[in-house]
Amino acid sequence: MKGGGLYSIIMLVLMFAIMYFLLIRPQKKQQQQWQNMINSLKRGDHVVTRGGLHGVIDEIDTANKTVTLDCDGIFLVFSLNAIGNVQKAATETQAASAPKAESKEESAKDDSNDGSKDESEEK
Image 1 (cartoon, rainbow, N blue to C red):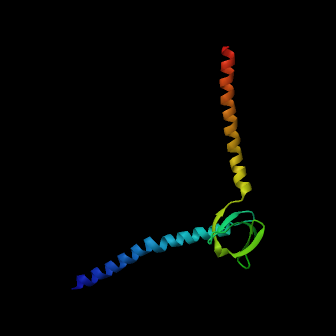
Image 2: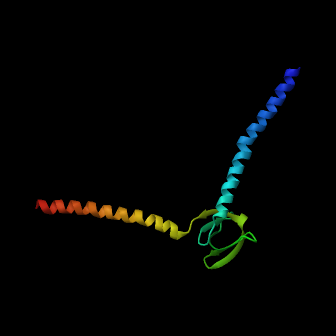
Image 3: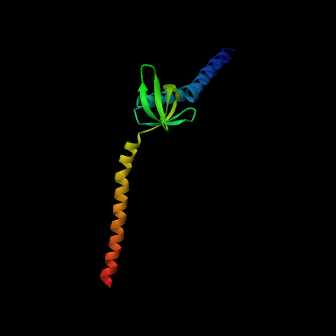
């Protein structure tokens, strides 16, 4: 009879451990990622609210925990909790992608010039 009581306690502890690793721990990680995202917000970032509204951050009020979004000239104030997704400012992404695009264009020009020189030299 004593073994049955020990078995019940072990099963209860095992079920709690499974619940922790499947539900609680991933939720804490997701909450921490969201908090880091909110802390890194700055003016000019493109955001999507949890309701699906797209806009650009115009102002962040940390005292009131609100953010003002510019949605095609209409300024709307939201709670920071309403922010669902952040895309960094367009200037950062354009600056990062511009050198890659230029290098691809230059290499394509070099390849086409190499081929044209060979043909003209043969004639």
